[in-house]
Image (cartoon, rainbow, N blue to C red):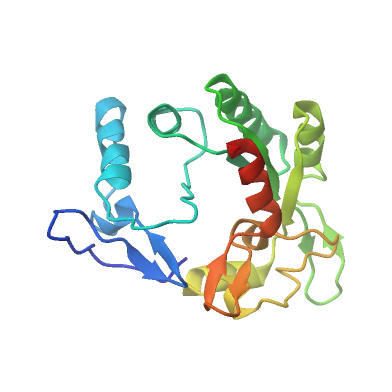
Length: 224
């Protein structure tokens, strides 16, 4: 999605240099193993990998470190939340009931380990036919918004089921870079989509992606 591949170089201090694109430094297990190799790890192996990605990388000076974690409440989530100070978590879910169960558990887990939940994002919220513009809620309507009310959290944005988002992700050109004024970014309900909220927009001065100001404000509130 970030149009990055290859093995990280090592610094003289034997730290891995993160790969960079769009002004963002990235590190992934995908850079360290074969492309088709599965990562079938649990327990100590997971904690060791998390520690390596966090502590053995030459991150340099960062404004924010965003960690994309798999769904669930397993070893990865616990290792990250217990080993590093986290300013806040963002829960991303589709509106369907099965996904919402995991989202609810995830929010409760972060609260239990004293990590503030900044809000929820509704993924695949609506499909709009590219020909007739009719909207269909394939995975249900407003399920994440209902969960946000139950948890007393904010909805940070919606991600439509949009072909432009899929195509630009597959090509490694995020939609906020390649099509910043498209409907995929400026969602019809007036709220920013997930890409716009988490990454924000392309800074005209520095030509790099930046976090959405509203999310930055939430992080600052919970960090103070």
